[in-house]
Image (tube, rainbow, N blue to C red):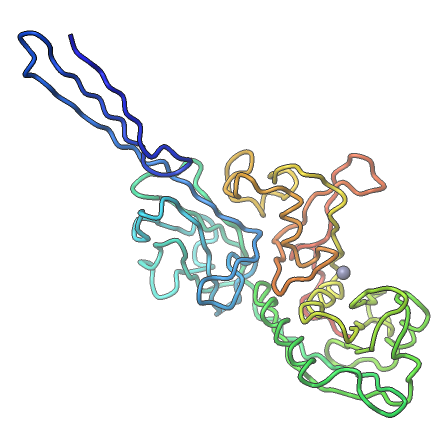
Length: 369
Ligand SMILES: [Zn+2]
């Protein structure tokens, strides 16, 4: 009679499972024993097109929607178990071959993270072909576009109090510009401080309400500046808004951005995206449902059903907080996806409608006021 023993070890969501079969003879065969084990490795991959993850040791958000023509960008997949070496994770350009190339040569296509270079304008699909000798099914992928650099000079107009003291410092302005460059990389947008001008004869504009006749007057103070126009005020009252953007008809002289002195550095880039035609997205619309391809759109997806290659516990509500156009934007870095998210609008019961938060809905990357 043979005894069978089944043993399971390390059975996790990802990791190695070992199945051991053994038997031991009895009576005349009591000296006869044998065992065999089969090892299988369960792989787990997370590839997130919508993320605000910064690469280790890096400064830019990974998995950007846009790669600058001639520039570099990093794409990252998290693969477990960690015992799988980087050399066994292979990427390829599945669509738009030639638009991006692996930086440093075609053999630099391996690892949990790869760096690509924008080689020609156009869209591309980057995918992971092999993990530890296995072909993942479906293959994780990410979409992007190569676009030329969009350079934006910003001209600042700083309100001064009755004594002539400016409400923000040059250092404060430079921090805002620096953050706009940090976040702008994902759209190949760059920013420079074009000029700082002081408005000393309008102390009544130091504190103004949002969406008022004063905001229109302030934003019309000067025009055709050859770049982005930013007015720095002390605060908005009675609201606690940090920034406001007037984006009326093209070439309307009142187009421009107002920043309050208590704005976060990231507020500037958020407002610039409003000037490019994007809108705010709030948490209230969709509840605690898992992320899905239907809501995120195919270009923001990375393969598979359900939550696909996003974390299996990621809710749509949590994902919205990653967006630069999230209405209560507060973090230092945030994502601009490739295509709009489909959300039910408050006034349109149950109907999914695209909310303009993505590269695809930007009318320009160089707003000029
Ligand atoms: Zn906003």
